[in-house]
Amino acid sequence: MKNRIGFSVLLALILSFVSAVLLLGACSGRGSNAPEASSGTVDNGYETFRIRIGHNNSTEHFIHQAAEALAKKVGEATGGKVVFEIYPAETIGTDREMADAIVAGSGLDVFIGATGSFTQHYTRLTFFEGPYVFESRQHLSNFYHSDFMQKTLNAELAKNCNVQSIGQIYYGTRHVTSNKIARTPAEFKALKIRAPKAEMIMDTVAAMGAAATPVEFSETYLALQQGVVDGQENPPASIAAMKFDEVQKYLILTGHIVQQNHILLAEYTRRKASPKLLDLLLKTAEETGEEYMRISWGIEDNLLKELGKTMQIVEVDQSLFRAAMQPVYKKWIPVWGQDLMDAIAAAR
Image (cartoon, rainbow, N blue to C red; front, side, top):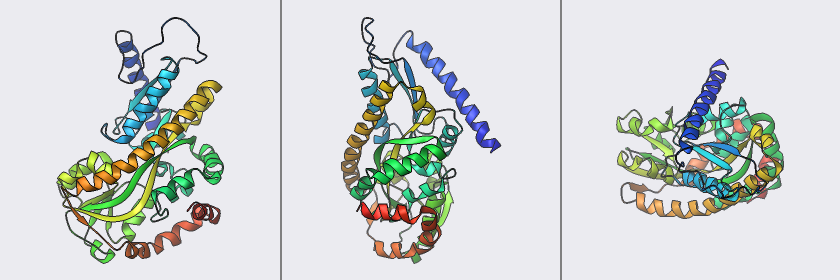
């Protein structure tokens, strides 16, 4: 707890310093995310406001592009009164550290990432990273728009994690890359696979048969290059953006998790914004999320073809891996609750 609070305070200080530097720079020039200010002194009803966004992806990833699109749309709609600061690629902390800072009530205003970063505060959220919980990209999107997600889970997010989801962005279907070929859970026993420090995904990788090894996302390339781990698991967009294909031979199509990122708005920011600005932010985040969700589907399909040029694509019988997940389901379904499982089934 002390470490978490300590980092939250440190993150708040870092953000305050960076914001001050950006503000000084704005006196003589404009940042890349700042829209042109409207001319004249006409009051458009919006207040001056700063919104800080953090995520763990590179600037080449469509998640970062979505963050920039959100900033541009809101900035232009408010005549430059709302200025965004975007912190990509874990520049101010890991996913978990950014999430902890928001829960503690300091730091970022918007976090774009998986709800898995908040599971230490609310374990029910682990279902979003559950193996084979969602059958397809459309199934996942259908669930996001369900009353259960929008009402029940968002209320629980606000209560337990100090955030609410205001938009979805499809992150991708997670597959395994490796320097050793493996097609079955039995063959996976020979693999040491990097996994994020999220209990649900660690359990999933272990159930697949591999030795699950936690490595920070930003350190994964080096770990693969140096042979600290044999492989890793991520969606095609992350594999390509991080150039993991440079240090991996095989792309094993396990499809074990169909995953989305959320545009998560801090409750303290929600309370601070005026009703008019909040309404604009909510609508724009939802629209931007839907836009980039569809874009990401096409990107993923194309990237699988492109990655097949630099890695050998390995088809597997996914039913073998689904069957291997029974220990995971036995452990986690009681945590998720039958009402949640029913809502997921209804969204198919």
